[in-house]
Length: 207
Image (cartoon, rainbow, N blue to C red; front, side):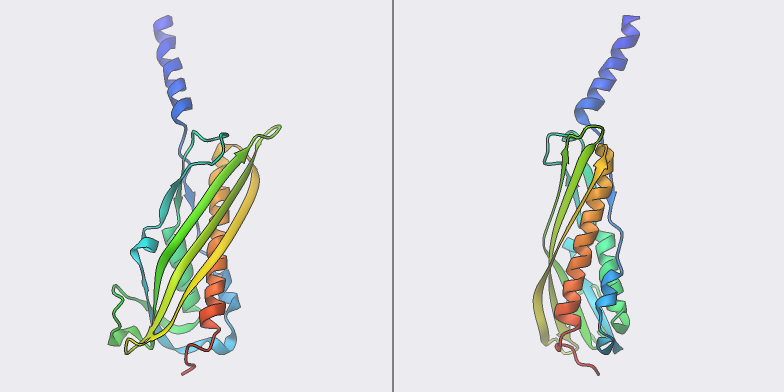
């Protein structure tokens, strides 16, 4: 009997010690498209280049609190962020094409947008509650944007940032959704700032 119980106890202890992994997937958002002024929608094509730091933007998050600290939260950001960028550009130009290089070419259209990552700082924290834990997540995203015309001349270079926060209550695994919500909010805010600073500005020619 003791030989049967011992492996079961050992397995439970190992799972308790190493914790679990809860994946947080961040969906894209089209909300910033609503901020594009109608007089800034262009009847010509453009292209975009997204840097490797954004294309591979995934992080493994460990809670900053002691509560649920044994668990990890792999945060998948790249696809949601890239699709959100594309939605804003498609809401602005007649057509957009992805480019594999930062060098302008005849196929790129009137402007090329070059996006690169400056920094990304997500965090997750749990606090002990009566029945469930309180969950808090924050996300800070900063990107660099450069726009060049078809001749390679720099039109604008700027930095855009966005913060997001979310909270809820639940068990350790529920932290994945809260983390994803906070990160999506930071993407929404950073692309709204992109619209305000670049798309709705006077940097881009109407024709």
